[in-house]
Length: 196
Image 1 (spheres, helix red, strand yellow):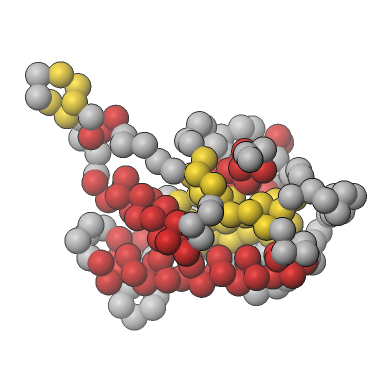
Image 2 (tube, rainbow, N blue to C red; image 1 turned 180 degrees about the vertical axis):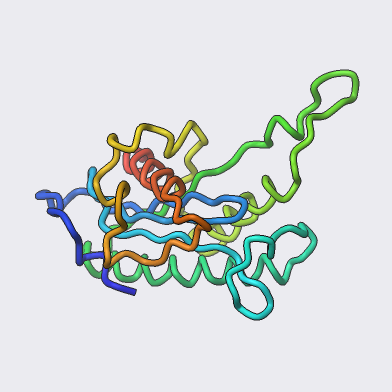
């Protein structure tokens, strides 16, 4: 992993600005971004792998396949642990971890007369499991409520989160290189920075 201190644009001038690692857990991809003020200094997006260790978006299709989720969570937590350690060293030990905490989706709430909307269970269950895994590793992590995170126009985000990825950032394993999870992680970090 390249140090989050190595960056493509100028770092914030205030050494006292809180460094926050925001995490966006998705059904197939989990992203993290290290944010200091409005500056995104490092990020990555990891996906699930199959039994052979190959990237495989379908690896999490079975909600009862705990081995697949364990592989996925292990990859994310390993990368998060490295990022936390490097960020603590660079920011003098002051780093906050935050993750988007999902609500039970409309698809699993009654719409009346005993009927429910349809939604694949894994699309809600996998991100919730990732929240639990992160909280298990970082019990003081802030929980950020969903609110259109990562959905502002691309020009509202720093250049590190639009256009070509900075060369020193971690991998983006999303199928088409989508940056929406990283933008959501950036928003998570911004909201968490304002929390007590």
